Image 1 (cartoon, one colour):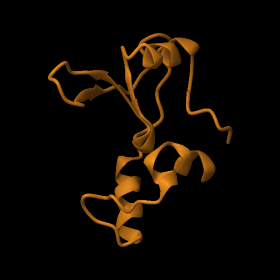
Image 2: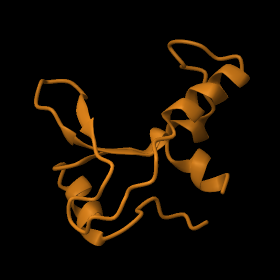
Image 3: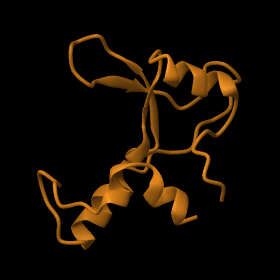
Image 4: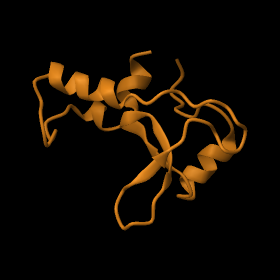
Length: 92
């Protein structure tokens, strides 16, 4: 697998750069930010620009890995590669 987390068009990457869409690398999630002052967002399953189905979230796999490593809340001891998309880019 490549080291590029973007599954489809450049418009999606540009929208994340412009903060119109939120990308949570460690969970492989894309979403529309909710302007509530926090980090909330509505997860997207399709790219709004090219209609490509986005890859599924890895949130459950991330927490499974934390449990496997014996790490619990607040997850401060997670290895560095698990704080970004590096863990799933390197595992494929």
